[in-house]
Amino acid sequence: MGKMKLESLQELYLDELKDVYDAEHQIVEALPKMANAASDPELKEAFRSHMQETKNQVTRLEQIFEDLGEKPARKACKGMKGLLAEGEEYLDARGDADTVDASLISAAQRVEHYEIAVYGTLRAYAECLDHEEHISLLQATLDEEGQADKRLTMLAENVINLEAARH
Image (tube, rainbow, N blue to C red; front, top):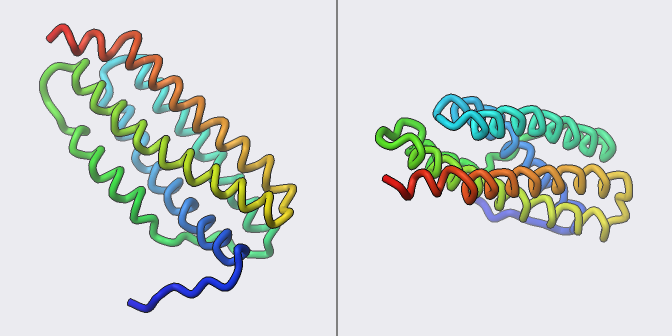
């Protein structure tokens, strides 16, 4: 495998956009499985509502590609593939429902934190590159990822982890 050659921040920006575009597509496939595996109704709803947000995030990325004069393209996101593979171990888990739900939250939060890191970096690149129109699109996604993470934390700390600890 050849070494990647990056000559500019613009090239890196585009490469990272392709990577996260793939990551979002992977997440679109994973969220319904997570919703089905969850027992807690609020957790199921959190996964389902984040599914629509994720589809909107894909659309925002497509807007950015279009603005750059690029066709939306995916570069295999190995990081997301690994995170989702780890999380899949919990999809078929058996046992206490609250403990299984806690495991799903753990897996989902790993994904959220990865996305928060990526979108924060992309927003910083957009700022440096004077892509003013991209900054608000990336910030909207970053805000949604932060809210999804907070929602999962609230569910874990106020309900699910407490119930799981009783078993």
